[in-house]
Amino acid sequence: MSSPVNYSRDAAVATITLDDGKVNALSPAMQAEINAALDQATADGEVKAVVLAGNSKVFSGGFDLSVFASGDTAATLGMLAGGFELAVRCLTFPVPVVMAATGPAIAMGSFLLLSGDHRVGSPRSRCQANEVTIGMTLPIAAIEIMRMRLTPAVFQRGISTAATYAGDAAIAGGWLDEIVESEAVLPRAQQVAAEIAATVHTNAHVGSKLKARAAALDAIRAGIDGLAAEFAG
Image (cartoon, rainbow, N blue to C red; front, side):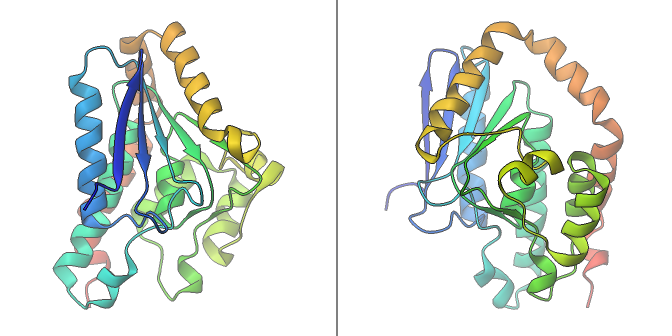
């Protein structure tokens, strides 16, 4: 079976494309494949920026619901922790990360989207934390990612009512940085990544974003560390 994650490099830009043929569920296996691709980008001394893209239909629909349905507490906590660790990795990655929201970004998919340094979407890029519609209380780690990137009003509505944002509202609320036509999302993300790679000093980039995000990263980390207690019983 082919990998659900593809890695390629063009000059200084690495592109990591998710495509499981469905909704790019962030299962433990998908998380491992993404991390392996990020490892490859880190090991490649030529990479100065990374693009993380979805398939032609969706960026990511979030966690694998079958793991939740299995009743396996350890597997569920492992998947949750792995997803938020991946978000932290993107937020702290040593080179800029550009997200290509080729379609909807839902639940953990939306938190991953929020973890990019620049986010390109299309009119189809619905952004939503849908947890309260499926009977799940939002994890603290998710709340802290949303708090860091969204405007206060959108943050509150997104958490309490699972409000969906698209188009100009997604930009105004902090979900996306720009919108282009659907077929242009990946090329535009790669263009932005190439421009950043050519202009940004890598050490200054990572040093500055770590300072700017320090409080949020501490709060997200506390949420990850407390997942077992948060969802006990």
